Image (cartoon, rainbow, N blue to C red):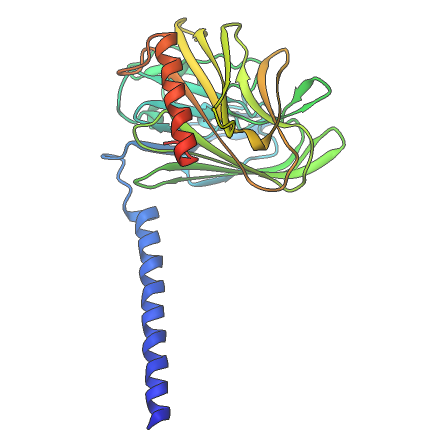
Length: 334
């Protein structure tokens, strides 16, 4: 009898455990697949590729339309202005701002300034590959990246210059949308710079009602010089650490858009992860300490024409100080 009771108890516990696991799996599935509704959502991420044409060397010719995909292995022939990936890479947005990353050797991050609270990325570049450089009903591409990093992207700072992603064996992109955030995950395999060849993962995410992108990176090897930063457009530059010196930011503000009008950009960082704050010809830089652990930082753009946007340098600096205090309290930003 005692043996039967033990068996029954074990069976009951196993059943409860299985049901809990099933519930957790279902909740995760609901969150990632069924819950997202673009009609009510405040964030969105996508990557969209051309179809109906064919590759001619490094250019995709005669494409007839674009289709969205959840994941992509970037073709080896793809480079800048290949006309294959709509607006040249993955994009992510909130109801306040949009970003895109050039998924080619540049690997820079650009900003879409928005004059609407609507999600707009699925419209961008549909009516002409780079029509977003001109003013649209939703806003426009506002940042000239040039030879810089844009804002919050990655490079490697070696011998006084930033090396981009000119040599990579393969690159994979995956996008995901949930009610709470939208995410772009990029895996670079065989990124070669100087005498090193590493794998690198980059996860970019944005939440509703926020300008801020959370960027988490991880390298397969502890190499010197992995960096992020802000393109230098010769406007006002600011750098500040919190009173406890755990968090800091670098930032720029001034007339630095294609409009032209005013834009603020900032990168927030954990001081323990950064080896050097510096600059070179094209960017203000944060150079990270060599590690194979995850590094998380945050970046943002604040365009003056955004609905309810920041209009002055004083407002921008006050906003940054509020976010720095939030980091000190919570160790994260929303």
